Amino acid sequence: QVQLVESGGGLVQAGGSLRLSCAASGRTFSSYAMGWFRQAPGKEHEFVATISWNSDSTFYANSVNGRFTISRDNAKNTVYLQMNSLKPEDTAVYYCAASSLDTIRAVTIGRRAYDYWGQGTRVTVSS
Image 1 (cartoon, rainbow, N blue to C red):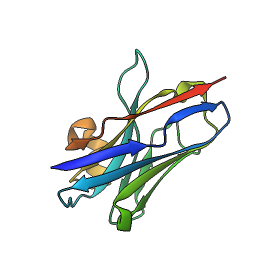
Image 2 (cartoon, rainbow, N blue to C red):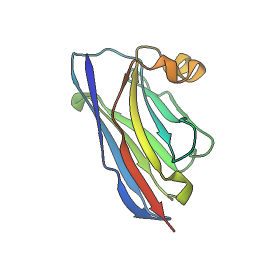
Image 3 (cartoon, helix red, strand yellow):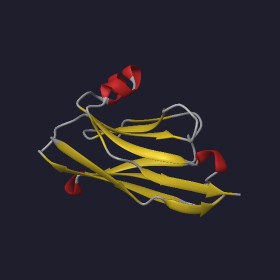
Image 4 (cartoon, one colour):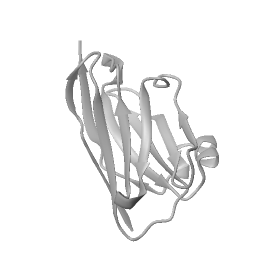
């Protein structure tokens, strides 16, 4: 089993920045992609970004492209989501997920491509 633990969420004003972290532990997990998803209150679960552990390949949802940056630190088994220019509509619980597939397949397939999920970290952006 792989455990994923998100951190870094909290309250921030619109226009501010926040950096989320996702630390993997437990069984050593070989995967092609790590991703971030989010779910706002009353809204559907949505894709945010994904990154391959083996390359610089990244994909972003149009809603966050240019504002968010996903990155990795393999030595720490950690994935980050740098969120800049935050908007109230970014308010959501953010989930980290791990996929054994590469980023292209993971993006194509969607949520079901991810085998492990964290419990989420709450991000609230006030106006």
